[in-house]
Amino acid sequence: MVMRAKTKKELNVGAMVRFSREHAQRPGLDYTTDWIGVIITTTTGAPDLDPGLTPAEQHFARDWDELEIAWTIHNGIHIMSYDEKWWNNLEYEPFEVISENR
Image (cartoon, rainbow, N blue to C red):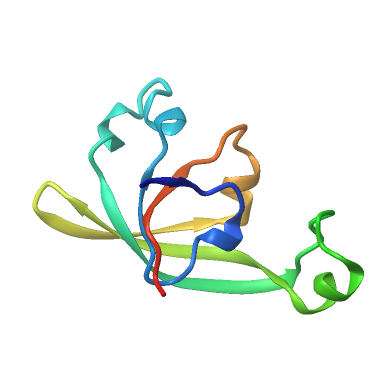
């Protein structure tokens, strides 16, 4: 079962991901259709000000500023970084979680 990464909270270290259909169907991004990756690092930063959280949860929750994914591309492994600035400019969710790390 594939879960949409509706929030960054679902993107934890060890999760197996792929680019979402919305991402791969964008002009010039179809080459990402078959990429499979594993999140290898996340860098946390500022408090998570998600309006769905209570003030106490916002105080302790941290949103990530950057994550790195090790992608399997053309029989090789490529490590790529995605920062909050890149993510916040998108009008769609760029990743789907294929398998969660427990």
